[in-house]
Length: 90
Image (tube, rainbow, N blue to C red; front, top):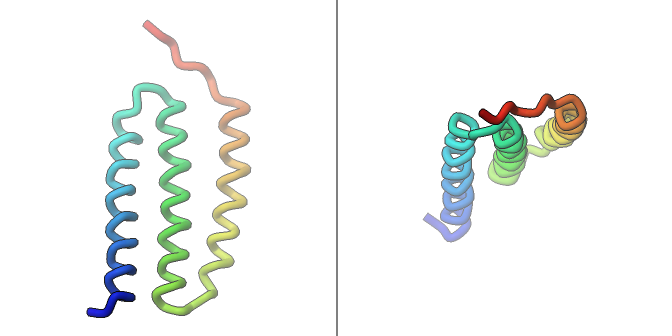
C-alpha cells in the first residue's frame, strides 16, 4: 500500500467513526435541538463522504450532488430553527 492509499483509508475511517458518534447523539440526545444538530452533522458527513469518493475515484460528477445537498441542508436547518417547538422540561 502506498502512502496515498493509507491517507484515503485514514480519511474513510475517521468518517465512519464520526458517523457512529453522530448516530449515538441522534439516538441519545436529550433534547430535540441536540438531535437536529446531530442530523445536520450526519448530512455534513454525507457531503464529506461524497467529496472523498470524488477524490478517490477521480469522478467529479458527484460534486454537483454535494452542492445540492448543502443548499437543501441550509434551507432545512433554517426552517427547523424557525419553527421548532421548545421541549417541555419536567
